[in-house]
Length: 105
Image (cartoon, rainbow, N blue to C red; front, side, top):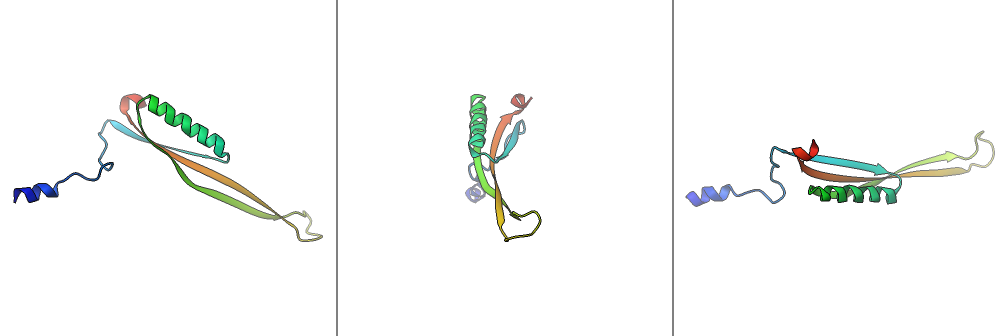
């Protein structure tokens, strides 16, 4: 009967443990129109965090938001109905860091 009680107290899945009280979770969210620059900044952040021996998760690539606007070419409304289509792509990355309170200070 003692073994059944012990089996019910087995630890949770790996990675879901509570962090110790003296550690801080930091989430950095980056967004940009330019993918190349965004990837470079993410790589620099991850490299710097690993040099300071921090636990790093990411960069996690979030879905790209595509903002579209369709507008008339003619300012006055006369002439043939011609339209322009403009779009803005916003790329987003998320980086999670876990660090001790000494490093944060």
